Length: 180
Image (cartoon, rainbow, N blue to C red; front, top):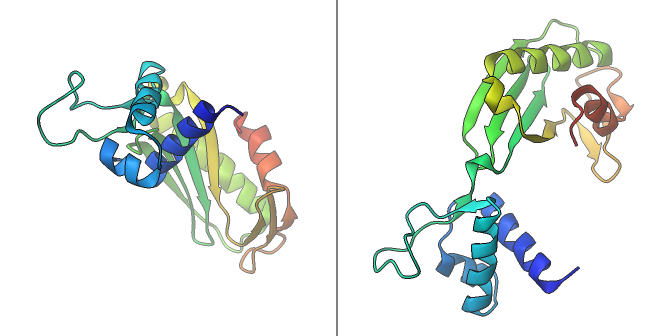
């Protein structure tokens, strides 16, 4: 991987952990020459991945302008499976919530009931979201109710949901949603 690509990834990761950073704050986190960082930011901006809405030109002469992930860089779905509820949220790349929903659980919940609730929650989320917001989905995240093997995408065990053991959550969600 090229050094420029590594730098771009570092910038994007920094913005994921802290959604609004100035150029000076990025330089504190990523020790590179200012010109190198600024060039990478300009390229990310041209690609539509980051936005610097308060910046107009090379030098602003005012307070530092924050850099953020561009809202139109993508949409993402997050799902949380819990004993009492299953929740889903649709956000843009800047973290703004575009739609959300909650399905109350029927007890007792087992693995099949959990899968049905996830499907129902995703269906309801899609109904609540604007069609334009649903387009451009980049991925789905999942808050698992138990222990997880992140590398393999497997739910190892949830003590509060019988049967939620060694479940291939990542593969199942990819098949259900068509998203990574």
